[in-house]
Each structure stands twice: as structure tokens, then as C-alpha cells.
Image (tube, rainbow, N blue to C red; front, side, top):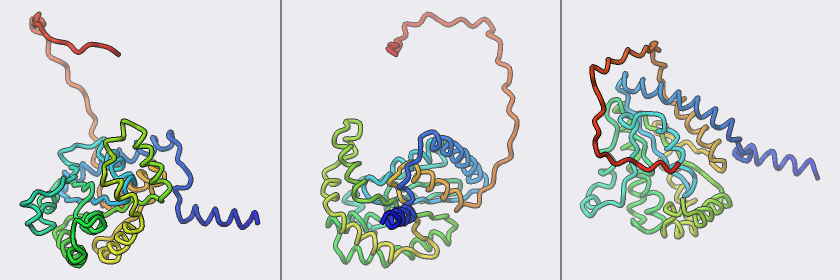
Length: 276
């Protein structure tokens, strides 16, 4: 009996490696190394004129925002640009559905990260009734051709789906309810979505079936352990791009100029109180 339990536990861990939590010290060391590689990637993108588009989708509370934050933490916002579009305007609603996203696609020397994307139509819009079933099905039929055009125009397109289990999602939502620092993350829509776990599962499965293509595959990351999930995603992202380390140049600080008689004037300035 004990052997059966152990085998079951090992099988579960094999299916979901995030069962084993990652310690903070190990996490921070690994993250620092990966962020250094992201800086190298940035240099290559600028020098080569590469165009990278990264899509983040997933369950509510799966850690999309936290992962994106760690990706852009040490790089330039002029190269790495995060796009999180608000609710469409009436004018945008009258456009071709994907039109408002296209204007944000990367130009040469840019990395664009979509914090949710055109796949809203396959997920929240479908589940919550913001589009008709026919509109959702038409989107799923059309989007592979759009993504093929992106790739054919030299955009490196990476699509990530972040997955948490139902118990972990419940824990995270409850922590938002009781933590004033996180309460802004919790909307009425989140609560409605929470009750529709299996509707979202069906929508996710249909999306994968229709849009997991050879030219734009989906990559699924288990994020019950946020730290481990972030490292896995960033590491995988780096592996998908053929970047090269830039040449290292020694840097020497120049001498500062002499004061040349400069004296700070007695201006009536207002200073920030030093409370800490």
C-alpha cells in the first residue's frame, strides 16, 4: 500500500513538477542569471533588428503579470514593450476583431509582450457571452492564417498558456480578498469567471485544438509554484530565440570637470521629508 501511494505521488509530481516549491535564495540566483541573458537578448534584438512578439494567456491568477514583470524588470522599455489593452471602444468594436492588436505588433528592434491578447475572443469573451458562438468559431478558424502571416514577415511569435489547478486558484483569489495590496486585482468579472472553471477548460481546449500550429505552437507552463513557473518560462523563451552574446567592452569612467567657481545658490527649495 505504501509503495502504491509513493508511486501515485511520483506520478503526480511527474505530471506537475511544480508540486515541489522552489526556495527564495535559489530562485533569486537563477532569476538574476536569466535576467542577465534577457539583457543580452535585448542587445541582439537592437543590433539585428529582430521582431519578437510574446503572448501570455492563462487561468485567472496564474501569474501572467508577475512573469511579465520579471521579464521586463532589467531591460529597456524602449525595446521591451508591454501591451495590455483596455475594453474596446465603440469604434474598435466595429473594426475587424484583430485590428486593434495589429497596430501594436513589433517593428525592427522591438520585443512586444501581450498581457492577454487577441485570444480574449477564444476565452473570456466566449465564456462570459461578450461574443456569439459563431464569432468565436470564426476567430478560431481565421487566427492561424494571421499568425502565419506574422511569422512569414519575420516576427518571432511565442505563445504561453499559464495553468494553475483549481485549489491553487481558490487560494490566490482568497488571498486577494483579504490583502488590501492585492484587492485592486480582483474585479467583479473575476468572481463571475471563478464559478465557470469548466467552461474555461472547454474554451481552452477548443483554442488549443484550433490554434496550436507548427508555425505558432502553444507552450503550457504549470505555475502552481510561481517562482518555478517564472524561471521555466524565461528559460524557455531564451531558448526559442537565436540571440548571441554582445561583445563585452571595458568601461572606464572619465574624470569629472573642475568646479570652475560654481557655488550652489541658496534657493527656497521644498524638500521631501526624510521619515525613513
